[in-house]
Image (cartoon, rainbow over all chains, first blue to last red; front, side, top):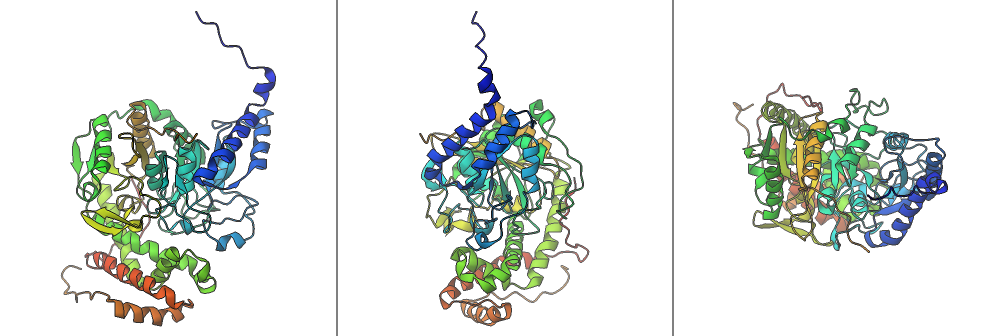
Amino acid sequence: MASNPPLPPAQSRDHASRAAVAETLRRIERLDPLVNAFTDVTAERANRAAEALDAGRATGPLAGVPFAVKNLFDIAGLPTRAGSRINRDRAPAERDSPLISRLEAAGAILVGALNMGEYAYDFTGENVHDGHCHNPHALDHMAGGSSSGAGAAVAAGLVPLALGSDTNGSIRVPAAFCGVFGLKPTFGRLSRAASFPFVTSLDHLGPFARSVRLLAGAYDAMQGPDADDPTCTARLPEPSVAQLDDGPGSLRIAVAGGYFATGGDADAYRAVAAVAAALGASRTIDIPEAARARAAAYLITASEGAALHLDRLRSRPADFDPAVRDRLIAGAMMPASWVNRAHRFRRWYGERFAELFKDVDIILAPSTPCRAPKLGQTTLVFGGQELPLRPNIGVYTQPISFAGLPVAAVPVFLDGGLPLGVQVIGAPWREDSVLRIAAFLEREGVAAAPIAALG
Amino acid sequence: MSDLQLEPLAALDETSARTLTRLMAPMLGIPLDPDWIETVVRNLTANAQVARLVLDFPLADELEPAAVFRL
């Protein structure tokens, strides 16, 4: 019989968090130059937090877990650049985003801010100001955007947990391209206070993680009302971690057909089929008018994004990434009646989902129509046609966030190549269900987020 | 509503989009570099194309916008 391993010397136990932070900072220093996920490293702050943990002045369910945030989250003392050149001239933020504070209250340790597409109007992870973010599983490929640094930092093993935002797919796309778990909660679930906005009607914040347990633990820690965000729900926290081991149970699961099973690479549907097979889901359902939903989300994004940035377009248009600026200018010129119509359609579309969810609990769909494209690629083949890459990466994510639905984005490695993502979609406010399914898929080995081999 | 006879939507051609861009930029106070116009025009025509999908879908007058989602 093997003897018990010797206990570590008292001194090393007393310094466990400091040692872990030091190792994290070393790894970031060594590997981040390859992936370019970080734009700021908050080493001093991380060391202070680790000291507090080691001294027993802090603890919690996420004790000692290092995390980093997309650089649109306010971090006290840093200008919130939101991937832009213009915003770095802002005064440093005076306080932290409440989601950062809530993770820290649970014991997690902030180690830095992460690269992103300019003003979050991006699916590629390319950034002309801070340099492109690279996919850790293939450095000449895109990390996906706009939460590029969040996907890449987790996939590269720089941090096990990161925060991003998702307006039309900006959590689910990089989670798919980088092969990590992501959660886009229900619209209004997590506070958006002290984060730089993009599209008021569509913005969500959420976590990325290497495991579902950590994803759910972080999500649980961040829940709760916030008077500083008028869109944030008054619902009390509905913890998800306790149900992670429950398995699919009696949840009714279906695969989205039609629009969500057409046009993309065969591998995107193979990933969905692998997940459906593991769950024993054989039913297919039709989500009505998904193409129109995407169109409506597109109009609202262009218009509300333009309205947000109008003063910057009037004063510093040359300082934008041209690809972002020219879309915003066109968005500013759209008739308001088009956009209002899109909002009214959203109401109709949400009611269709309410009907669907009487009959089903979980819907599966691909996250993207393809694996991560090469950096610099500008077109993709979709439905046999060569189309502009940027808008079409979000073809499957956009109609889902438009209805505000919670989604666990699960990574699927089909073969030795780059990963794909599957959206596990639930009814509004049922994050517990999508996380339960994601945890089951992880246990079954169908979904996994391995650290990329970067040396 | 579906019982109304709707005038068909005209496509926004490039010439019209260019004119619209030149007229609207000053109304919005956006100083437009001539080099940017072609991309703005491309985005504007794409937006108009996308908008057709939304504008041609009949909706009841009672369907008011609400970004509220319930179980």
